[in-house]
Length: 468
Image 1 (spheres, helix red, strand yellow):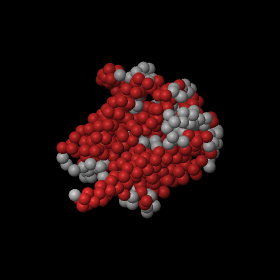
Image 2 (cartoon, helix red, strand yellow):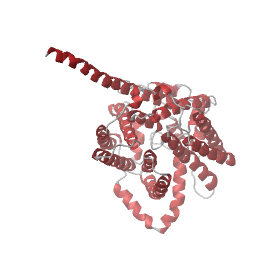
Image 3 (tube, helix red, strand yellow):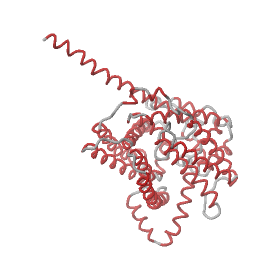
């Protein structure tokens, strides 16, 4: 089975290489899929298979069960991506809409970026003063604060923050005209990226350390750098990310569970890297951290084995259908994806509890295929394939447009930097598409108003002059 698992990873990479050459597939989408496969499929598979006996991997299931779910998950992703090989893997209605050609000036883009910078600063205050100052406090907030006013308003606040973040991503994917406004815009984007990585790191996020490297790759592609320049910069950045980011990831993982993480703690731990023993153990520690973070196959196997196939049923979908309704208006609405309507019934919490973590604080990633089996048995795999195929078509359609607002929606559905929403369980795709179509409708409405207003004003001018 190990050979089959490795073979599937190679086939996935070859398929994505084919998609990257397809004119009907967005380069942003194909690059995101490449990162998804490397981070969540190739790395945990190869590390587990080749280093099972040489590093301390905190395995929660046996080796054969890990391989079984790894093969199943890889096969489902492979089948779904094959659907993108069609001649037109997008929705023509979105591509041909007037909104798809809507432009944004550098000055307006800069204004939105500045709002995003302010929103990051405000979210840091909200997180520290209301949600919690440590990683565990923030994980527990969703459980212990249910029903409070802060909890009910938090979802809308985070949703707007994510939309603003995706607008910033989209600004990096456009070749702006040269000038002082463009230079100011890029400076604002740099400030936003630095603030995002800094604050998220202090809040205990390790995946955020990948974001600058990922954005650099997308930026290089958007600016149409030569292959030699792009490969050189990507190679240097990859080494830097792996070295510096790897060390920071280890430090964050070791420190975040104890107390509020401060910059002084990170600097203090960094000083220890000059110690030879730490340097020798850093490689093994990094491999262990990668498997611990990105192995969703073992957690998926544990979910099905412990909770049972078909145990979730339809309940996880009710919260997804109601996702467009703000919790401030409907406080009692069920949590999307949950088996009992609360955060305690979500697979990420159920598996964490089965692993011995506190239900209120534990939170782990679970593979989409396993969640689909937990919901409807093996019939859920069909549902997984169908909904993700539509999901990817919608993402591709939005990213292929020239409109920054629509590109922002496509990037929102990708889920940078974790990329977990790019290929996910069906109830999440429902929630994701509902939200995006709602925002699309708002964009469409204001775009129509903008087009109607000038024609109305022009229609009045001849009348006014004739009366003079």
